[in-house]
Image (tube, rainbow over all chains, first blue to last red; front, side, top):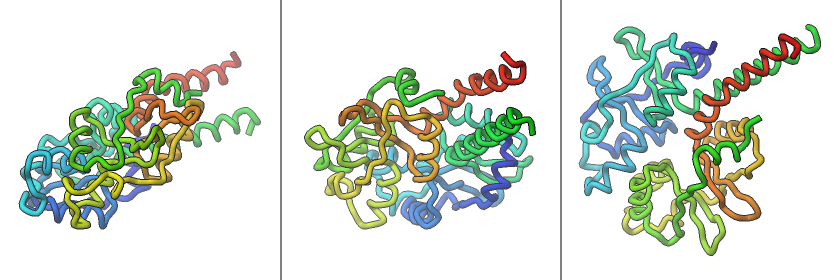
Length: 143
Length: 143
């Protein structure tokens, strides 16, 4: 059974983060540089929110705000759903579809150790399927 | 083996579109109203592009564009990767991962008949998981 731990081993545990006072504009710059769809918002060691492309698409211009004047703390999602290294990929899939989210920060106790995205989950499913197929092929041929 | 048509049967054939001259602001409004992450851009019945939250996050304020003054045509992705109803879900997953995209418009006989998102694919995998295990099981017991 594939867990979050396996996914992190493959993708690494770099996490792109910003402080709550950073402007939406600067957050977007970082997201473009790192080619990611979300940033974790942290205050010291504490995760205080997550800022995603969806937050930007829904809450800035449509609410008459400007990205250069708005700190991410104003529009980030504050209730962050997290997982831990032992969480299975199945549970991650369920969380993402039920809560309509695309990123899950990974906590080990109180420590943030990585982030997995919906893309990472799909990659893991593809890998698991091809492992299963290989296993079945070996079984059929009697290896 | 599940295909695109199975996904469309489960989620419906609703697909939201926009014309190329419509402003990014209006496009964002439509996306917010319908709680979606992408609009297919159509002109005279033809798919000419796709506009997603990612296009918005990367190509607007960071390139000094204003959403009320910019037509979708300027920032949409023109090379649209599409699928047809018979496409296997595994192929959809590969496309999404390798082309780094989140939506696949579905075309049949040159007509846009639906759209599937990475979220729709995850839901299909959640429900299809049982299928995969059933197959393994029947192989082992020689049914």
